[in-house]
Length: 182
Image: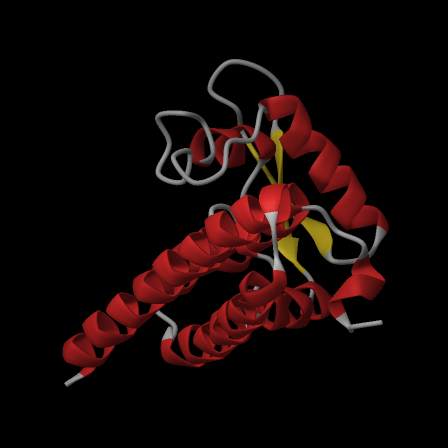
């Protein structure tokens, strides 16, 4: 079992934890970040109730903690949460761990890239690791296509095109990242 699997966190949990790595925040502010009109809402949407569930989940696991109270604009004081040292270590590990399934490229991978950019961290380690995973998936699919028939062939061809597109996306980001760092 991987180190990350021991945490048993959902994508929503990881997203909230990564947001708290940036700075302490309260649930309402986090919900705005992941709202349809929020900065990350195009990648991953989280409703306010889901944010508060994630906060409870993360706090129960010792990955975040209440750091202070802040007066609310209209209502009771709001509790600001921040990532604990174990939460910081866990989310940094998650940020640099490539996704192993193509379908997670649309959510988890894009979230990781967005948070690495927001945190002003180097994208290259994640992108290079992710390119390796996508290349392996593509090679495996090319082998499957040789013997696949009917529906299995249709599925393998579809997945192969998704793998090619995903690898192209990573290679383009790598080229952009390297150009920006020079």
